[in-house]
Image (cartoon, rainbow, N blue to C red; front, top):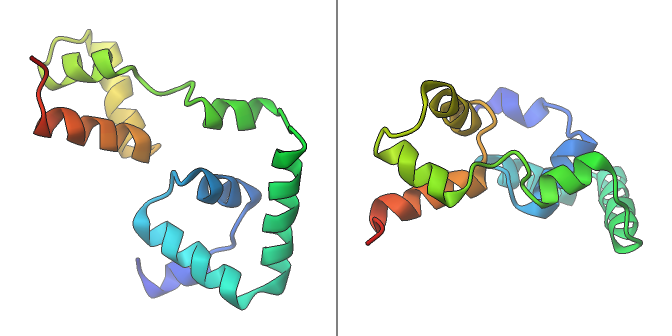
Length: 117
């Protein structure tokens, strides 16, 4: 994380991802630090938690919570063995490199450490 990253605004989407623990370690640390320093940001986070507790069901919230865009574990197995169609493999790369999905990265790391059967 560069010094410039500390000055990036924290969006509601960032706070959602923070609660879902889907950010990189450096992003989690940046938001934790900002929350300690900014009472307004803490209020925003408290409001977000309250909305979640009341059962907010926006499309985006459901999409993130249930990882709708994430490839399945079976697809990741095929990805590792180069058995996916090119378009699907391209999406998997995009999902890891651009979306930077921490859940899928962990899944992939696990498959690399413990290959199936």
